[in-house]
Every structure is written in structure tokens, then in C-alpha cells.
Image (cartoon, rainbow, N blue to C red; front, side, top):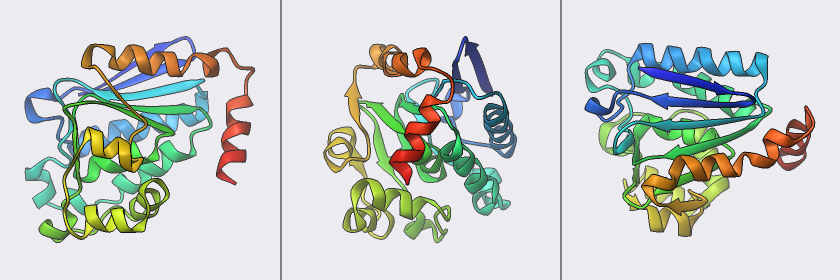
Length: 205
């Protein structure tokens, strides 16, 4: 249910459970974690994370969440692996981003989304804690007050507001989503090895 396409220095990772709104199972998370560990070793120039269908991900599979998946450390390990990758990472959000899936997108360097996407993280209503790294990443992007709007008040925002707040970097047409993501990787794909990692270290320092 996770597809990996390697095209020269560009890796495209796709969630493929569209019939279940790309809700993430334990096996899917394990596969994603393994792919990101592999990327850390092989060091592609750029990586795009996207999904099939009209929803990027509804978060954890509800049946598995009730059995403990919602609080499994794999979520935070996965997002931290993505954040630590030395290459350019782009979340190409083909639709709504919800719950624990938020961590993967927050960990990417850039986020682009279709206009129909919605964004919410219902940890207050469901009485779960967010992934440990997520609040700080949210604050870095949208500020403390708006982070509280999402985490404490349970606010759902659309793509336009997400762009205005700084949660996403561009709103694009659905048919243009992957092509736009690929355009954004062009410089990274042509850069000398290691240059992207050096730039990222300067930005994050």
C-alpha cells in the first residue's frame, strides 16, 4: 500500500489506500519508515510524498488506532526520519491531511496542496497527544496562537487559509500537483552532491 518510484535522483513515495482515505495501518507506517531509512542511506537528491485518490491521509486506521497504533512511537520516528533527510522533501498533498498523518507533512521542507484539501488534527476531541515533534513544527510554521487553534480548539482549515497561515506553500490544481512538485525539485536534481544538505543545515541552524 506504499509505492516507491525511483527516477534518477528523485524518489516519489505514494500512499495507495484510496478506498480507505489512505488511513495508515501499522504495516504502512513500517513500510514508510523503512523507505525513509533507505533514503537516508542512498541519499536521493529529492523526495516527493503524495497519495492516491482525493484524500492524502485521514490519519491512523481507526481499527488499529483503537488497538494502540495512535500512540505508537513509529509516527514520531517516521516524521523525524523525514526531517533529517539531507535531500529536498516535498509533501504533494492530493487532498485532506488529518490526524497523525500531519507529522509527515510537517517534517517535509515544502508542502503544496490542492484547493479541496482540508487540514485538521483532532487530538483534543479524541483525547490523544500529538506526536512529540509536531507542536514545535507547527509553531515554527504558523505561530503559537494558530497552533492552539488547531490542536486545542480543533479548528479545521481549508487550503486557502492554510496558505495564508503558512502551513502550506502553494495551492495548485489537482492535475498539476505532481508536475509542480517535480518542477520544485529541478534545481536539487541538478545540484552537485551534498549541496542541498549543506543549504538545509544552514537554514536549520
